[in-house]
Length: 120
Image 1 (cartoon, rainbow, N blue to C red):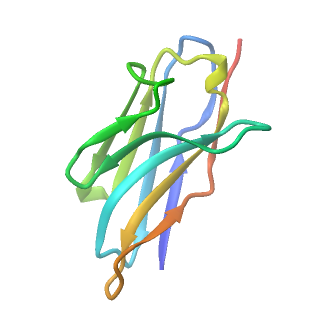
Image 2 (cartoon, rainbow, N blue to C red; image 1 turned 45 degrees about the horizontal axis):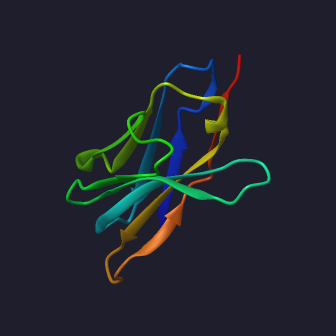
Image 3 (spheres, rainbow, N blue to C red; image 1 turned 90 degrees about the vertical axis):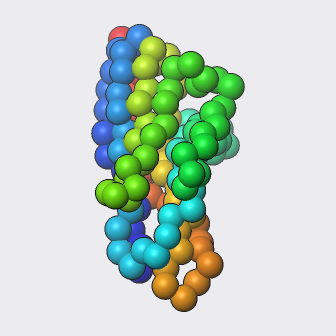
């Protein structure tokens, strides 16, 4: 069994910063990639940032230069540093991990989401 838990959301003013964390736990053999997604009301869930086991990163155009994804492999944790936040960044942010347990080749595991609200 694998659990993925996000934390760090909240209310922030435009131009402010937040740091999200996502910790994976359980019977983990390997974590291949982890990513942050977001879903705003009435919109589809979209990829925000992704990081592979080797450290390669990719970002949505809308967050490039403002958000940074990083990971601590020893802690099975991925972070999303969000700077220069805008009201349009308001959404529920979800973490997804492509994680293998002993005996399988990996499945996608989602966290429960954390709310980020950017408003004055």
